[in-house]
Image (cartoon, rainbow, N blue to C red):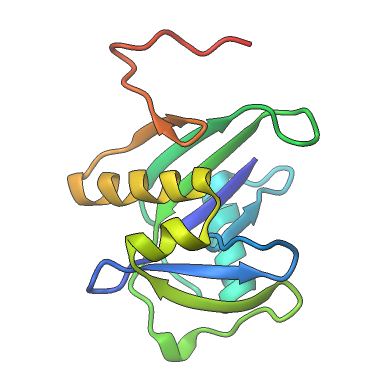
Length: 150
């Protein structure tokens, strides 16, 4: 299970990070530890990766994913973040190469397609004031869609 935080600036650009262990960019976040809530894990990861301490925000997106390389499923939780003072950002050099404020077009270019879809959905949820449920990065209208089966 993973959890991340959507941080935006006044121009609605998204803060992405470039991990040292892969070629695509991500939202700040990571794996939720045993006994840790997704919300607590997301904000712990933001502190570890960027040196930021912030008040937890509301849940924006839950995304279920199938067919991971290890054969298991994934569940990713995205939460709203607080305003960020750029001067306070301190990258965790062991895990991250860089960070950047990104437009939607830059997110589409830098992030894995599923992550880009999650971010687009999270921006919609933030703007519209609700939470979205996704499957493999695609919004699901629970009223119209049967559950996905394997």
